[in-house]
Image 1 (cartoon, rainbow, N blue to C red):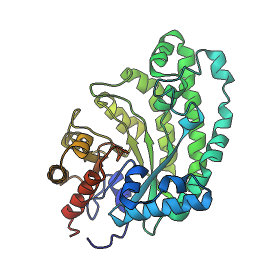
Image 2: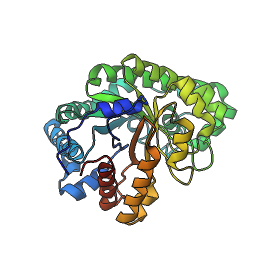
Image 3: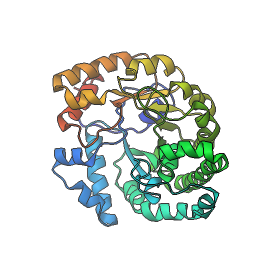
Image 4: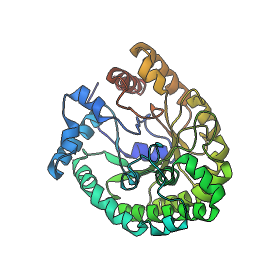
Length: 350
């Protein structure tokens, strides 16, 4: 295939549900392990090094993805690294907050400074490393629902809602305040590097939401509304990555929170065509290729599947194609490349 020239505006337009000159590729993340297997380069070692090493690591990674047809580079620094490192979110740590005393004692005001002490070197290096035409997507990792679970694991969070409703309500406000402060500073410092802002926050699983719809409406979504409003005030679209059967709150996300685009789908919940039919006239839709297909099917089967997804997407303006989740470390490189090559063939790059 010919040399590819990235143009980040394709993803920006797709996120705004506007037509693009051809179908862009999008990934929530491409595992550095997968890239290392393809490139034979120690990206993890570079990204763990000093500022110069980080810049070199991002340069090799972003340069590679640009060369195979990507317009944007996904990167986020997760707030949960400053809480319990995701151990509460994954249910292997105890709750940090059980009552009002715990909530008031937590050093909320220190989170923004600690966040940028941790991630400034990465954002700075990334901004210097992106090739011409490419910009970054994502930014500040974790949404309020995931962050709440790192403070208070999911089962304990459900009990907290019943046993300590005042603490439960204030917890979301404190999280929202911290997130807003971090996003505000992030947009000031790195707005030129990032063209599309994204939050990843899994609200559901295969059959339903993880908490009652009204819990999301009353506590989670007000935090989204003000953060998305801040992002929009800087002229940037907002992409929500959220796994699960979240149908009950999609209208709230679109009409109240004002998301511009949505990513994450799996065929066990609904094929990509259903998301397009339901929401393709209202928001951008990213993804489409089921993870099981990428991980378990032959290259030929992947190519046939991707062609079908591309055919399904025709006629919808705001679409970007990629995995329904991410290119995780366990995705075979051959499956990833088969998907990318097929999308590029479908858009005429032969």
